[in-house]
Length: 424
Ligand code: CAO
Image (cartoon, rainbow, N blue to C red):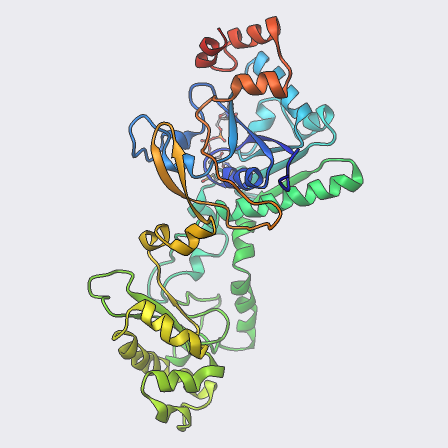
């Protein structure tokens, strides 16, 4: 039995943030019923298409283990079916633009009236306030949540990150809110509204940058490279390049092959506790006890020289050799792994974090599996549904429609053209 077996999710999500949340719930065993506009579906199905005619990787990689029902939630029959789905489901998850659900006629008050036990979980760009009505995408959230202003180099513009912290990060926050509300319902008997604004989610992930914002009042941030370089601090936490956030100096350094391989780099932390080991490894044993080098605070104005010397050594080794040499010495290092290396990684494949999935339209593709491992609820990744693949199944099995009533629904156009043929 899977952890969330028996939990039914009315999945009204689209694009990335909401779908990552419901995909996690599906992986943990929930029955996720993805409601999609007839004939159109989630817009990502046809975005960034690589195999003509097939659902895109954008869609397939965010919608595993779900069932798809085509439903026009704006016509009368569609609204009737949606009402039945709300009655049957434990959770409604949505990430429409602000107000879209109300415009369909399904306000939180109405939803509660239909099913007082239901949990309604929403991703929005911003929480209540002056921006609450804005539509928001990933990079907007990264910019509004403190990530962009603190990412990049001091002498360059703000940068967005490759990690989708606005979308997938908020999906994670929302999933936690949902399971917490499900746990609460066990005691209260009632559902509740769960809101995960993307700005707030990004800000939560930028917590240490707000720590530094407040530390500025006490003087310059000494662990930032700019302190050692004599550059003054402004009013806000600056962009820290590749400095590490925890107070131990760290940098990204070139490794053997960097001239041709854009990922032949390693992260290298000169942790104070293993300074002696660092000096030995790079062939500078004299720095261990030398005046101006022995104590961490004395090294702050020499970080460029020190990392320069370390880099002369790392450039003689591959990033993996650096790892093999430094790890046993407790020197924290990490190879910069490319997406190609990750997708081929045997270790990640063995744990199911990278999986191969078969798809009837596109053949086999690789995906990121479930990154969270429950010992008693293992995850089996199954392919994403085709548009409306389970419309009839859901109408019959979940909602109990049969005979004439089912025929009427199918003929009403509320559940999509192809299904009419299938029913006949
Ligand atoms: N049947 C009938 N109508 C449907 C439907 C269905 N099954 N599913 C959706 N619709 C309608 C909606 O009701 C809405 O209609 P109205 O505009 O008349 O209210 C319309 O389709 C468009 O929905 P939307 O406004 O959510 O979509 P959009 O493309 O205009 O905006 C996005 C997309 C992501 C910017 C917006 O949904 C949003 O801000 N969401 C919240 C934040 C978020 O999750 N952002 C990240 C997305 S991932 O990058």
